[in-house]
Length: 197
Image (cartoon, rainbow, N blue to C red; front, side, top):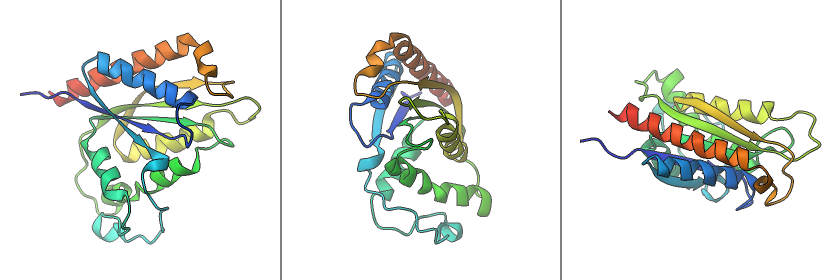
């Protein structure tokens, strides 16, 4: 008997209800409309400490830190699809999200050091929001997110990029982007459901 796919949205912004959160809301709305269950993980509230770079996970495949890691890893492992939403901060991602990304090192260790069997590939998406004035655009932040999603065996089905959105609510002036995000969420949910069968 097939089950409903779980789409996990990772909110990378330290500020709630801003433009990247609004993009994530739209994606998750689309996913629910397509029949998925949705969950949200807020990076800045995950209780994660920064990676120690100790390489202990290269011995066991597990992180040795005692913090919010188990709940984060459980959320990642339970998801049938993962969507990451983030603002662009100085061409990169906010610190809380970067901590979460760095703490995915056990997945890298399992894949490249311990050579453990890889889990099934899952679909996903990236959502980026940036203000004006940064000459480096989206490229570096997107590359960082793509890197961790590759380690998590996520196939990125699409990217939504919102530029010139400096203040909370600016995104509402771009209904086409919100519609694109909703459509992408539905696509991710349908692909996740198909891969479950």
